[in-house]
Length: 67
Image (cartoon, rainbow, N blue to C red; front, side):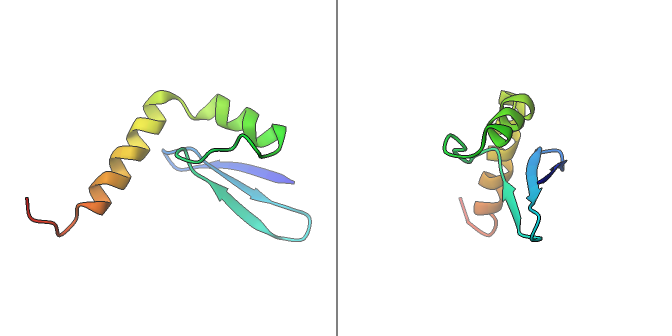
């Protein structure tokens, strides 16, 4: 398994032996994932990263909405 940490939001990208790719984002519950994924999430997904990811998602959801 190959693990990469990408973007300012610390997405965890995995590639297995068969070329299957997965992406984990800071808003995801990884409690049921492998220990490696849980360890990477604990290390990289600080509260600052989680807050920044949440703000990005909120801003994308509000595009085009009149207040």
